[in-house]
Amino acid sequence: MAVPLVARQFLERWLPTELAARIDWTTLQIDKISGITDKLSERREDVLYRFQLEGRPVQIYVLLEHQSQALRSMPWRVQQYTELIWQPFQHEVENGSFFPMVLPLVIHPGPGKWNKPRRLHDLIDIPPEFNDWASQFVPDCGFLLVELAGLSLDKLADGRLARALLGALQGQREGQMDGLQVKALVLELFAEPEREQALKIADQLWTYLLYHSELQTREVEEIIEVAIPPQQKPHFMSTAELLKQEGRQEGRQEGRQEGRQEGRQEGRQEGRQEGRQEGQISAQQKAVLEALEVRFEQIPVALAETIEGLKDSAKLKELLRAAIRSTDLEAFTKSL
Image (cartoon, rainbow, N blue to C red; front, side, top):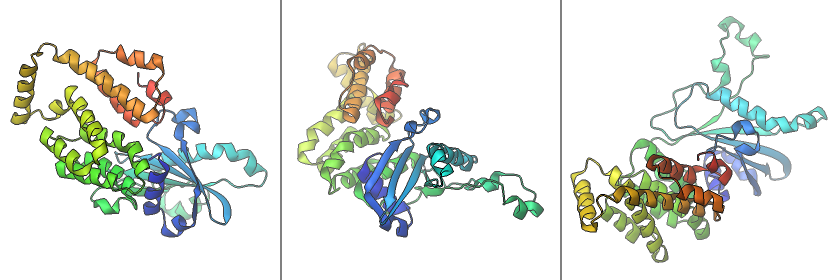
């Protein structure tokens, strides 16, 4: 969601039509939440968009919050975020300017619908007979809700790249990441006209889809054959094989007799039953390093050496998730 093309495809679908039509998309800037205040540095999933309207030098901030669980206190959290965005403008407001508009946008992928209040006013205990009087001073703040649960793929966004990403998030939360769903999302990704932009996030999305699905080897091979451009097939196959080697594919297939038998047979054929755990950890290290290289291109030598020195399988799994989700290397290092 921090890719400008994804942001535009997403916002054009979920902002009011009249507003989206007037946005000067050349002014779109994407800020990391951690750049607003250190208090929010741990919230790595949040993104802040800012842009101007055509014909008017008006700044509008869109605060994007990814919230899987419906929280009753969400309106209060949104107000806190809004106040943090406004803090740098306090001096300008004192001199006659205005605070910028902040549009809080909460993505709720499911499962299920949002069943909690969406306005701060509804969380304040005001006697009904004093409601009109209290409205003069009681704070109120709400948010626009993006509910993905139950929506078809074409309703998620106005562009293919954003649809593929939101579809992956929706499918993971609703437990619908089967072969057909993954194939549809990969087809959507590579049908994006902006091919260069699609390739920038292809590795991350592919890793996410494999990690959160329960695909058999033959299903992965079919998806690669049908949905991925020829020049990209070897790379995507190697990524899938890497995840399988490090135990993720096998682990997701536990409970399926065919998967367990296949895994045992492969282990016997390779003659390394006792050494499988060591090989798994080595593959995990490689997966973390590869994810970081895809996301941030260059990895500090010291960071790479630290990862290569880790032997804890559970910790390496945690780091792979962090590598996929972190907005920068500084955020990732907090997971070490």
